[in-house]
Length: 108
Image (cartoon, rainbow, N blue to C red; front, side, top):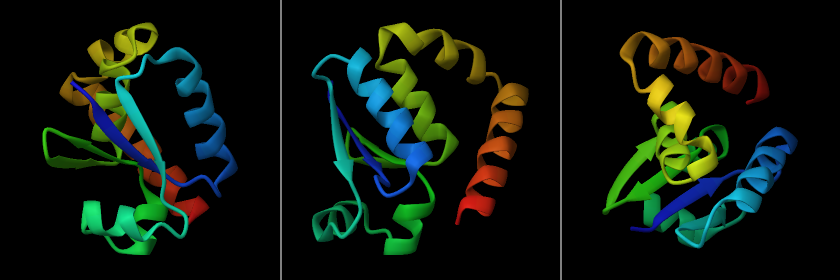
């Protein structure tokens, strides 16, 4: 099963993290830069600011955004599957989401 990951390549933190994931994933993930990408707008039905502010994943035709998108990425990269297993627990997910949203607020 392949997923599509939409990320903001103009963000140095995002770009660095995604480039790291790219080194460790198989060909089961499509990485799509959202910067000035009309197709990304059409595929996600998100506004340009929404695409820049959060990471998004399309899996089985469903759009997943923010922290939940990271869970899907981690689930699909064997080296990071442990993070998926840890952060899928509600309390840990809430804490990770708080951190992610706080960072996104200050970055955007």
